[in-house]
Image (cartoon, helix red, strand yellow):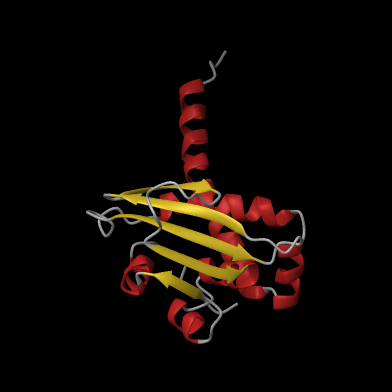
Length: 167
């Protein structure tokens, strides 16, 4: 009678779970690149909006390149327009010496944001999927920046963003 190897099963489950966020991010990126703007707009007006945004911001700290963010201490406020009620979804990204964490909501408490990025939901999805070049988005008025513009240029290089690939 063979005995089941529970340790091996646990190790395989851990490896699969460790790969899952990356596979999910790749899948979402591919979907965003292939979907027409109208479909993305409908999704970002639906109840799925909250789940998508919270998932993206939950995953964002793991996409930070700790080496490139070493020595950086900053708060970035993301304001995503286009909620069905006309409001914005706000998320704070706190970067502290090579690591990051995100918190839902804006706050008047210190620290003050070094940078505030404001955009609609579709442009946000395109930005995080690598389908919208940040500089082009800014120059076209699709991404609004307030605060340290030089930090904005540096921010993109601190994250591993999926490369835009042909659909």
